[in-house]
Length: 177
Image (cartoon, rainbow, N blue to C red; front, side, top):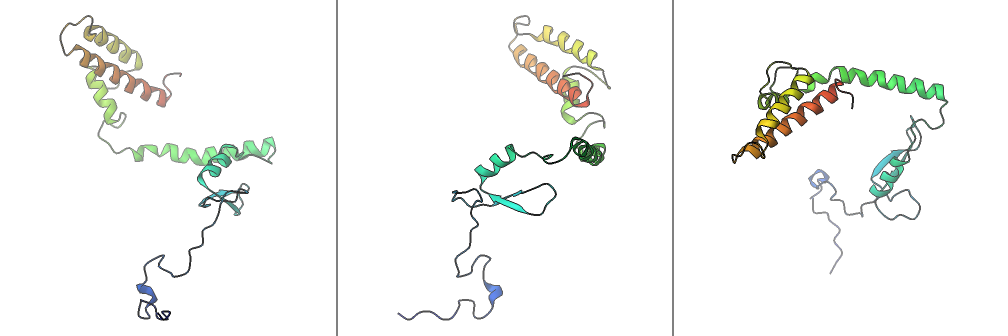
């Protein structure tokens, strides 16, 4: 049989599928010596430099675990860089309320609003009120105290609501962890 000299695209190279070339696809190997896995995860060789290493997933995770962002900087330069990055990141932190688009009153998420309903609280209670409501409802709905069949379900709902509000207060910095 004769070797085919014509392409199957009738002279229109745009008709080929992506990756449909006839030549073998070149795969970049991991830059770690002796590794034969594809190196498809770039990692910087140095801070603020364009050069990159290309590692496989296993070696990329090892590299990231040992990465020291402040290597080679004096303590003063490292503090200045950290302060600058915190300043830039605080701009995102102060605008974080724009990412919250769920139902609620603007100060609480939808989960927190449901938790307040379960604990029979209204408005914006402080954490002492939340603790008092939790203790009151936990005592009333404990399966050993309330002998009805739904007591365990109500008790679990009260516990879950308390956890949601406790975590929310920790995130806001109201509670000390």
